[in-house]
Length: 116
Image (cartoon, rainbow, N blue to C red; front, side, top):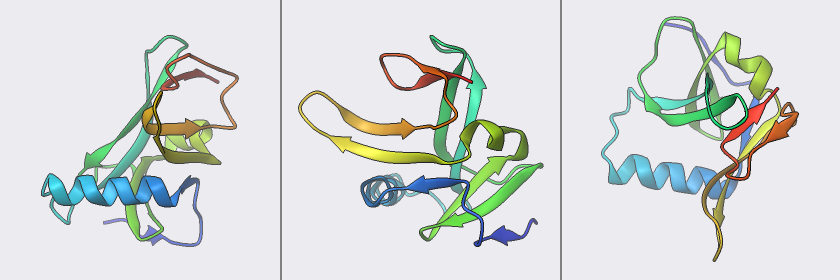
């Protein structure tokens, strides 16, 4: 198992995002050995889409503890996500997680796809 990094936080989770993630984890009975996987994958309108969900640790993961939440991230994804803020929006027009990524050169209208 990898060492958990508590001093380095490549991403930020707002209070609203953390509250929703904890609610989902509880409602879905996610086991304690699962952490929040944050990453990217090819696809979407502009090149990459975000990965956000609960998962088990995999080979090559770096483990972070961010606001008490265990977060798994592949090392290769960090260059695309460094400095990103994940928030939860609760409004008339938008409801869901939002990604504020300073590395994105272009984003799509839905906010879940970007180019770097």
